[in-house]
Length: 408
Image (tube, rainbow, N blue to C red; front, side, top):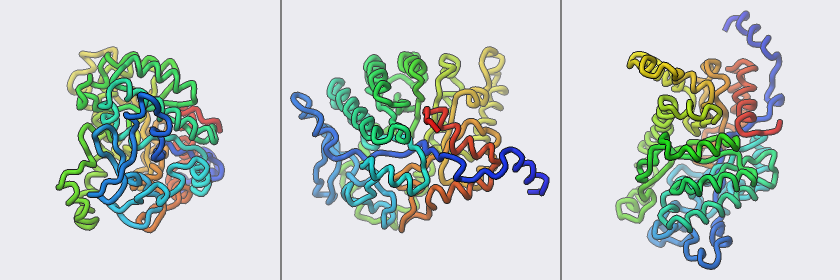
């Protein structure tokens, strides 16, 4: 960078330091306490309550929903863990307490230099179809119980902890009822999915879902697409799955690295539907978020969508529509965390990207013996050196404050 360019950057907002911003983390997770549902679902609902059982074959406790065995209890609570995957805490208590305790969470945020965090679920988000399979009524009860719990979790500091609601997606009218109820509890957005057809439901851009989108727009709720909509049994008891577990971490490490990276790119397909359907046109004030999908490939992806939109004649057949990148600039957002080398391109879309940590998941910005991550405040300080002060303030603070209603 030339001296002139450096001077030009400094003129935007001279001397911006990390201490001058309030870092907002737009993707973190709460590990559900083992008694979340059993302590709240009574009477005729008690038999349906998701619970934890010891799986003797696996040698650890796992979540059970209906007749489906799901993730081990400590699987998602990897922040600071001592070993590489597939090793993980066997109990919540063995992992980072901030994963499930709101007081410890706020202390961890202070340690990490994070002012506010958006809260996603684990079990009920990644295995939502298993909950649906309990039946419409008990599944709806499970949903409302989770939303009550995370609202209570966030109430420890409503300025800094931002809850997102899960919805009973198998019933559109039930979704709308729950959206109004949960919004009144302080929820700022909905956790949504881009693969409903895998659960024999209409595509997420279909007008079937318009009541949900209309309610979200009316209530000022963001629509948050997070990877991980599972319609099969990911943590099954099949001998092959158990053999893979016992094979150890060395054999499967390459495959985990490949699969994790590929899954982060999978939301590009969801975004392509958001941007080339008429969804944005039908709901022009709605904010769509692509979570844990990264930034670096996005400028190419959006340029590709525009190129093929024009060269396939969409501008002729749909003259009323905006270009995909124009819809993106108007009402779509992405998130990034570990990236450094690509961030210099953020000035192409400074108003559309936000920071995240993915705490306490294995890929998160959580330092530990099995992680090369810096403390988020250190990581962001380094990243700020590659950005103009104006862009840095937007992507680390202002964009998220606007989307999630964070008071600065």
